[in-house]
Length: 250
Length: 360
Image 1 (tube, each protein chain N blue to C red):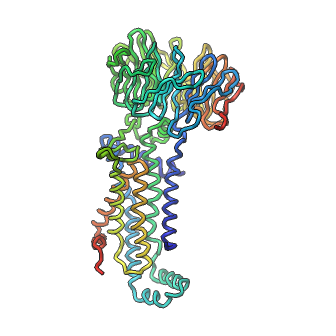
Image 2 (image 1 turned 135 degrees about the vertical axis):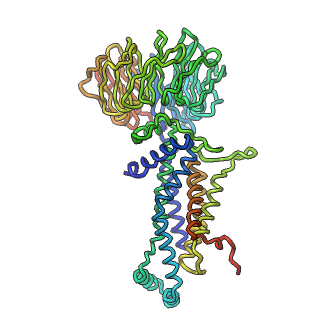
Image 3 (image 1 turned 90 degrees about the horizontal axis):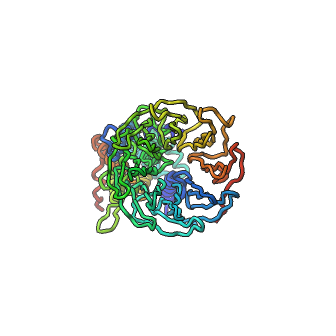
């Protein structure tokens, strides 16, 4: 089921893009990322709509009063919040779905990149039975796994003065942090959502950086491209909060 | 730390563990067993060890290395030299020469930058070791480098030699076959792009023709003098294992599970039979019987006319990728994922012994 629905379509799409892009697997991953962003655009739009509704609701007098009234009774507060969500037609989990969707895509893409590059006999044999008829894989294999200074099947290190620097992993940390900061709505200090966002902004870049450091650089390339496309997409829609990058005055 | 932060960190660790699990363990098998036999022993390369196994009893004689090392794995079938060496390449980029009687290391060659996936060709006193790093290394029998040949692709197949012209033929994943002077390493010729990778050893006819299967779903006949294609015969699937040439016929299987007998003169298919799964290595052709394995774990015995010798295929459990070998009237097969690493069968398919390595 996982192979049929996630891995095989990803592998074949990657191979197809590879065949039309002059057999450059790095560019294939970047274009594939763009396609994923376009395909998940309805979810992204829904996420933004939900986040905006949530933000407006949290600014409302009713919400503020509720926070004060039940500040010592968390159970009651949660109950009243749920009632308000229903009353105002806000789905509290609506903004989480696109983030959760990213997880199977990340895992699937990692497996798809490794399967497509097929650097061992078992992987190549496995690849051979998952290729769709319209992809002329025989003429493409072995895939060119070089992109810039990287071997896309291996964790990336750029040797500088004899030391392997994980340049792409550093880019992943920076772009993930930028993405998180720029897309977080401006919130009032002490809000629950703001606390969660702070936790996300703090831990997510390091998680993504660690994944980029440890696994094949093809996955890291996907992370960087995905982060940049997301920032561009949000900027084009006027939803970027540039002020989040500037430290607030006390 | 706040409970919400702890939950988030737990989620991160879960995701990391999930992705790591997808990557597989450090010693997960990435290929299938390779093995060879002499009068006394079978030498099996699989995962973290080379095993010497007594041919008559199935008992372990020695293993190399004594203790497993996660950085060292072996899959290519070892090669025996006439002066008593067992040559085997590792995924640790090292070529080893072992004493076949004791498993002691005689010498190592560590100049390669990539894995040794294919077996080495031993001819006269030279060792030709194809490497996944696009190079073919020629060494003398003391492990000294004589010359290096580089192509555009990885080499996953053992070369074949042509004693008449002092040359060897090297198949490559870059879709070409190369003819190389075995003394100097100089290129004699290379074929045009054959349309797909070649990962099986070509068959050489002393009449001056090479036969090879390719991923382009074809068997090709090539003029051994200049690399020109003489004929092409389409197959149903990718051809992984090299063809076997016997009495003017080629026998080979493809990943679609079809076994072919092909006329070498015309390229016409004499007959073909359908098996129950992909055939990923060459068949074993004896005087009157063809034995071959399928990935689904079946062993077939058919006559040279395509008729079934065994009324039904045998299954041992696990998957069968490697060519069976025949030693002392015993058929040896090495399944992956079965209870034992080796099964010895009589020529009717009845089990004689199995080899299960003891725990270290």
